[in-house]
Length: 194
Length: 153
Image (cartoon, rainbow over all chains, first blue to last red; front, side, top):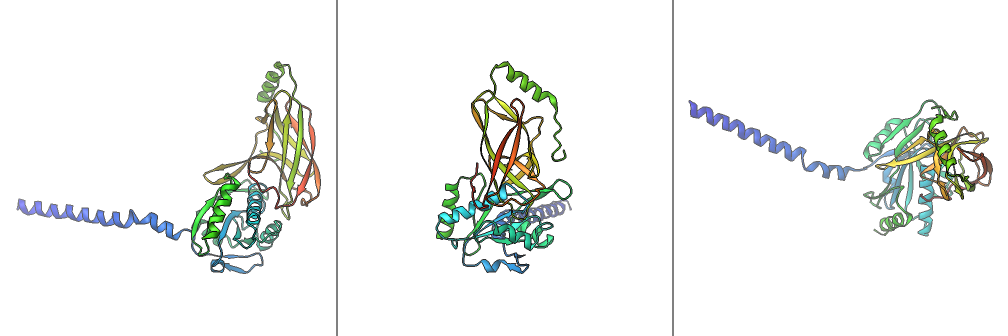
């Protein structure tokens, strides 16, 4: 009787270890890899003409993605102006696309986004969407944003890192606002040479 | 704190002025290269200027402009997230002796909200900077095309 109880307990212990191992294999190591693969991914937003814009239209040319808002006076125009300038230095406005995605869809409709991107005198794809569409794309691309302040004059804290994708839509690198122009240019050259 | 309503806590500034006065030297402030980016539809703008000081230290404690409600702001980056905050006028910003304070893209700048009209390239407007020790000084802000000045601090 006692021997049987010991065997039964051993079986219970073995089962527990087995389940733990299975659980670890499922929930443990594979996760980071999965996240890497699914970073970004396909999206559908709305362009400055109010038409749906699906990410498969981007195939064949590298692109950079920057999230911001049109009432942003400092970092957003500085970043877009910089991307335009660096692309000019590469001597080709077709070298890569510049995507501007608003994190403030309540104020930035298609018209607002279009007028804003037109300011820079070079092709920039301005994108907006429903609050749900913007929330999804922010989540998929790891973008943080948060409204600050009350009433009409609120501002938005947000991730200001530029994301770089190759001609197959694969995430390749980032450019931080704190990075120098030379480092940024080197990354863009690598992006477009691949 | 509401925009355009500087609530001066007098002590730090008064202390600064007192201590600075002990040095027996006056600040010599001059303002250079005032500019802003054209804004399109937006009624918010950032203005930039370099404050040069060829004398004793001073503090920038306020801004005003007929173009809109002007306040001192600072952009900070933390883990890739950009945040913009008003600079407490009670603290102000030091203009070092025989040095410079640059209000430039990606750092401290003048934020102007409620622009009476959008800024267009080629336009200009006046901006007045207020200091703890020096008299208020005016600078002309030139409006540049949006694609210019895309540099970081």
